[in-house]
Length: 408
Image (cartoon, rainbow, N blue to C red; front, side, top):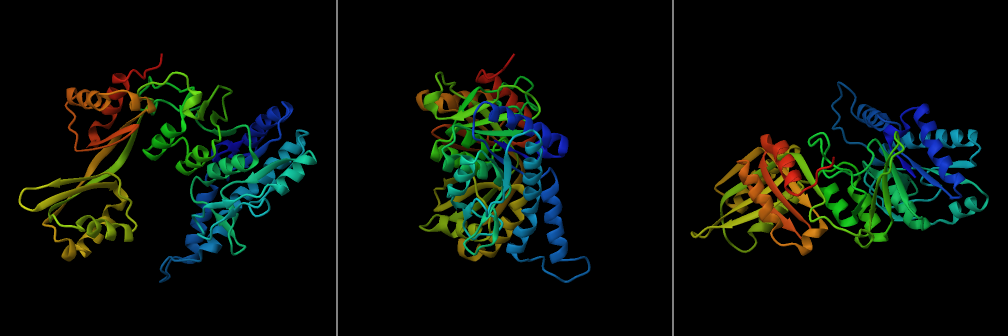
């Protein structure tokens, strides 16, 4: 059972979460609880690190020892796990807290963005045998250097799924401030419907395309190790959404969800010589600059020139521009055109594998609303388009209706 920052934001909410844990203990389960830091605490610690490494008026570069960064920002989960264990003890639930290094959750040495390598379960299993339930600090582990490591933002979801896989858990329940996975963002489409079940592949696509319910790495882990995930609300006792293998889902919709990503930008290199290695010459410098490229389209001209278009998030446009301008001599492009007023709209569904004409329905529906498509990419279970950002809400609502996703 994993509880996010809003679910453990204060003692009252920790008691509320603990009551849910007690309910599962009373049903006879050995429970491992994974907790995030209280809402806002991690941001506060990150700010402390930045201020310590580069105080006002100093000439510091803002660079700092990532090992000490991890030592500071991991403190939030340590506090929450101890408080959760104390509250559970008051409810007559035998429990103890575990830091990542005590389990141990063994990670790579990439401090600040470590990846989990292994989770030996002997220590936890021994305490389960003594009747103790585990409250584990999420987001953290221990690196090969013996220092505290952290998994990056959203890492508590990853901790929970990894522990569920290591322990062979029946299920991993993710408690958050929403009560499940919806067909689209209910803030944009009021008739969005909560899904009873969704396949791993669909959830992974939705998470990577802008849906904020689950962290992408946690869904990847769940799919790899077949961990059944359930998304539930910490504040309402309502059924949630089960993320599972598609074989568990009896009847598939052609499209299960509509995702959107608001802050996208489209960059086009105009008149690049069409020659072997041109793509490497373009995307190599972008990778070196840390620019995450998403959609890529190449148009071949008749005059031996090509136009190369790609998308990225808006806050990486400056880095992309600088990298491309620095490599202009090698790439030999004529012009760089940037459109930072676009958004990405995607339809996702494993039912698309066995149904023809899904993309055509999407394009026709957008055309009827006068929405022009700038870039298209597809996969086996996804179609994504870039459109003008001003049409984002209209596009989501239109496609939600087109594919029959409305609730009551």
